Image 1 (cartoon, rainbow, N blue to C red):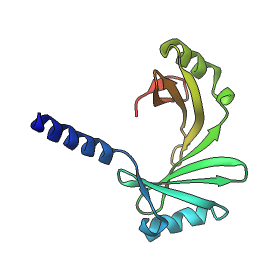
Image 2 (image 1 turned 60 degrees about the vertical axis):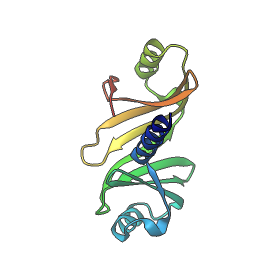
Image 3 (image 1 turned 90 degrees about the vertical axis):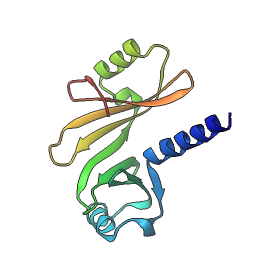
Image 4 (image 1 turned 180 degrees about the vertical axis):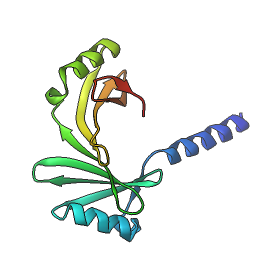
Length: 145
């Protein structure tokens, strides 16, 4: 029993470390902050997270909710813009309804890759008490993270 509890605790610690890590602005490398400030000088109340080797800045600009991913040198990787659920392409909504029975789409976003301009759509869905992000490419096909 004791061994099971120790193993469960270790698994939870490992699972927690795999997710995004919240950061204070002072913990973000200067190159990342400088790159962000160059591209988004109007941003206020920026919230930082570290995802693997990249940094995510969440903020509002005007009335839009934005999130950007930057690499360690401060180069923009992608921009994620919050959109209304109704703004998801009809094919995406239809696929969600067909493949995920009984879901509720809680949030939606349009993600644009900085280098290529490739568009991905993200839907945050609630199903059986769990919240999951589902991604779709420009052809409206589901893609894995």
